[in-house]
Length: 402
Image (tube, rainbow, N blue to C red; front, side, top):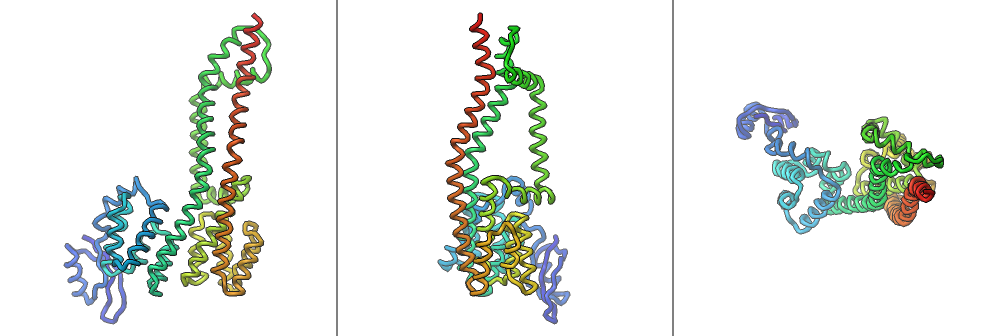
């Protein structure tokens, strides 16, 4: 078997590597024979490797599960329960098989002498950089429980914010999706059978009726082409936005969409301010904090803004200078950040900015939901009116003349 190890030499130098041995004890003896004092020995891949890989195919770890984990961990640590016991207890309670395996691996790593932040750092696909760095800061300062509570609050706030936006979008997306499917079925399979009556009579038809009949005839014969075309376009768009260029283009264009663009801008401002404020309040240096936030803000346009601010600070300047240059950061936000930098209250200022824009997003999503309902009703009404005026009314007139 192959074991990964960390060991100290006689001179006290920490070394890392891999060693082949039949067991952990055999690996320990082998390292000692080579003049190394083992600090950590773990089987490469771990005992959960196969099950973990299979579980990961079907399950991930969503933000709601992360919020619950950190909230429970905070409560257990506050109750003086050891970290490893707390993690094991949470692992046994979770229904997510993949997350359960990850937590048990973290528990094993901590048992082997690894710090909690380093153990979490081995699973960056599950735990955001924000949580790992805040826990490291808490370990150094002795405020681990406080740091974990901070993380839970931050993740929960972001989860609620995103959930409200998704909730506002689900209703119109569902209605439009169902309307599109029903409309396609009507045009492709029902209208052609109804228009047979009009084709049997040699009467002049309005131009819009002729257009509807031509479209329905095409759909009736080539409906599969339409389905393939729509699926291809949808798949191509999905693939494109997953590429680097596509993601960058989408992240830029999302701000141009009416109403939705403004909501997106406010969401990213709130996320930037919230996470940066928490990191700075947790004792993370500003350059490191900006670097972390750039990786978790979730939009490449804002990521570039934060990178610009990071470089500005690295050169001895201030964040506000970079923010003033960006068209996506409102002047008011840049001015508030500047005041916070000058007065040494940047963490409190960022928290106020986050609270304000989070509330704005909440208000805008509520207004959007209220506005979309009558718009959808009008949209569906227009669709029904087109079919009535374009098909049923001509049929009624033709039949009425005989």
